[in-house]
Length: 156
Image (cartoon, rainbow, N blue to C red; front, side):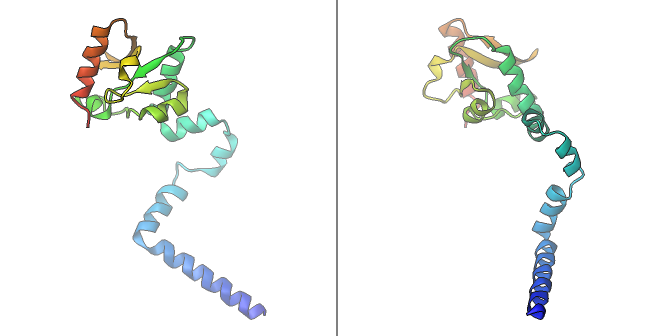
């Protein structure tokens, strides 16, 4: 009985070693589990969900939270988001715009893309231009239409 358990243990260890010696799984192991950025003791000290989201999602999550703080106290906000193709066209490469559902998950703010069916309800917009990325209130139908047409040029 003990010999059977020892044989099973050795076979299991051999299987695990062989599994992680395959190039794909070896790269995953080194980049995810054994990475210097994935220090278990640092993560045990910082259990705050907001800190972990900042750590994992980086600048995009910070940007989403900045927008949430900017729009705090505003009622019935529907935010028009640009897509990544537009952001790259104006040389903003450090920030990935998320899809509206993910943006809502992180901030609780309703958002739409220029290709969304309810884009005409958008009353705020994330506008990226030469002066940087900012949130502005849409005050007229003409302003909304011009932003939508600008973003639609880069829609997939």
